[in-house]
Image (cartoon, rainbow, N blue to C red; front, side, top):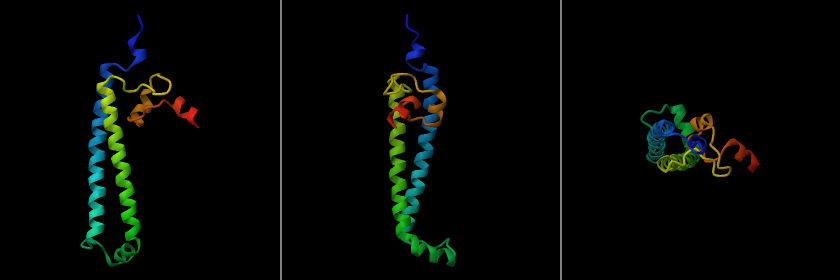
Length: 127
């Protein structure tokens, strides 16, 4: 009989990853709210908490700031989407399996990049 541990992560491991990813989604959503809130403040030109020195800088970098916030928001939304997709893979019990090699992605890599779909080996083959 084939050892199932070689093919996929155990339910206990998957539960641990699910908890890690759920926390990351919550933090990512909070960060996204902050980014959106900063963007809205840029639009309102709120200067209630700004010093005169900062005000001078703010006017010069307003356009860049809006663009940077927009890019940050887009990246953050993609990160949240990738994390949610990882949760789906956990439900399907396919989480942690490299889409290129079919081997398990190392636990340490998944803890650092929980939405990873490729092993380091597969990533290096792409270069």
